[in-house]
Image (cartoon, rainbow, N blue to C red; front, side, top):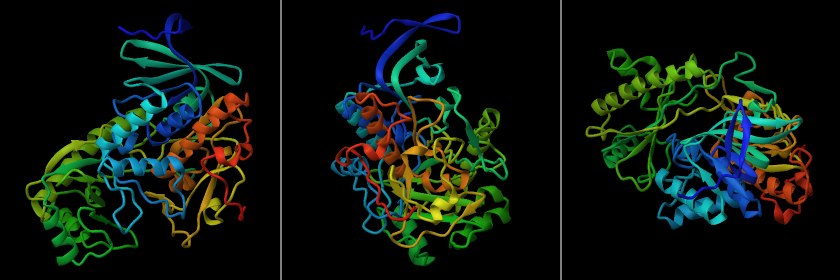
Amino acid sequence: MEKSFKGTMSYAGREIPVLYSVDVCVAGGGPSGTAAAVMAARNGAKTVLVERGVALGGLAVLGCVYPFMDTHAPDSDTPYVAEVKERLRKAGIEPFDGVTQQTWHNPETLSLIYDEMCEEAGVDVLYQTVLVDTVCKGSVIEACIVQTIAGLAAVRAKTFIDSTGDAYLSRAAGVPYERGYEKTGNNQPLSFRFEMGGIDVDKLYQHVAVELEEDWCKSKPPYFEIAEAMHRKQRYKLEELMAEGVKTGEITQEEAEYMQAYTIIGKNGVMSMNCPEIPVKFSASDPVSYSKAVTYGRKMMHNIANYLIRHLPGFEKAFISREAAMLGARESWRIRGKHYLVEDDYHNQSRFADAVCRTAWFIDAHGEKVSEKLPKGGFYEIPYGSLVTEQIENLLVTGRCISASFILQASMRIQPTCMSIGEAAGIAAAWGISHKIAANALKWEEIPADRRSYVSAGGKS
């Protein structure tokens, strides 16, 4: 049996094994964490990636969040994002539907690609390992404590990257944070996504696109989407179907409010169901409320599925083929970093010298605010300062929990943007270590342009 212990350390009155002593430790193997780990390792840093599940990819794989949304920003694909798309293509999953800029992936193929990328880069992945705590000395994190299949253990690192999505590593280290909407305290609503198999997609397309003349989905099978969302400006033909279910008592108003489904490339007859949207009374940042949301959401899931089987042409022989292994949290906790992004940055199309990526996805705060899209060609940038904190020298934060207001976060939270943020964090972590610069003192704009994943477009400020 191979052992990789690097001695022991004292924690909570006991001696626990140190599994790794590395340059970079990344907590969370979702879209941003995997990107951070791969890029840190490719840039010469010995890297370990801590993942609580048994697959990398986070919501894209374990949460059934599919496909990747389009940033709506021109030339927004950073090198890592472009590489993931090309690897999907080589694996037989064409991500481009010929019309939209969404990235149609395949969950199982994506998790394999991420494994391969980590293996090629030399990243050590700790699966089924849950972050528990941090051990800090002054303004430096010395180790993180994890729960493994064998019990408590520690990982020492020179730099830590918080890609947990919930800012857990940061909060454990004492970094200030926010959660929920500043005006109400509510998080964005959770989703409990699932997949349905046995669907006759051609029959579904004939009914929705031809018979109902629903024309907002411009792509055609095998790239096809259906949706309805009540109480929004855009009206959908399937609203009538869902409203009828409320009248007959077969589904509730909560279940009828929002329904969306996408075909999955490489899974014939299977659609990813972007629903149910769990009522906002359940919180993504309260453990008891979150747990109750699981039970409540599962009941909603089955009610929606059974109703569609009974009434939507093409679903007659359908069945639930897969449940997400985690709830879809759009927002939970967010750090307060050196730079704090706000709604005006979206509308003003802000630019930053230390920008790590660009996006133009609209402000999509479910239950609170949905904004108009930026003018065609417009975008704003995300600065490196939103990834680092005043309090902890050797910490970077990636993904949906960077330093931003609730409303701005509703724009930057989509997966391609999170991937680009993680990509930059990995490069910065490795650069800082090799040049002996603390992560929160490093100036992204001073790294040579050819070593950065993104260089600011300049202009607006």
